[in-house]
Length: 158
Image (cartoon, rainbow, N blue to C red):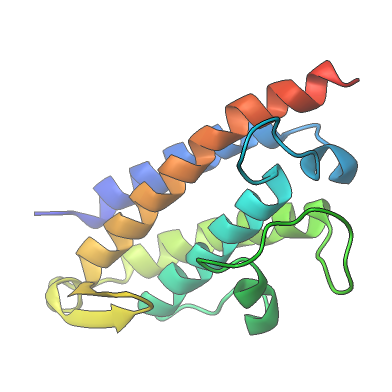
């Protein structure tokens, strides 16, 4: 059985990893494109924040970005290739990411065993609530791993 404390540890590990690779980057560095097909750090962070909004919704917690911002970075959204109207700043997305962490923890701590096994639908998924939260956590882990190379690319340009 998936426990709330195990999920909290996973989300916390993700957060620590994300911070390791994003700390000290500037907005311009977060906009740098990888040399091969892929997304910049800004898009990936926005995508992670979008999915944190989904997780917060599943946990009955308020989101950390407006729906329009979440849609900009949702699955299948266009890559960020340059500045554009309404594009959030890297610092704002980082703050939203950080604001989500205690809300996720609070939502998980409040999760009852009955709510954990309740089947819910969010986006493309219909799963028991705890499994859906774990799916989002694993999705974030995948994208967080992309930051390592992107950080090295940004630092090499300094």
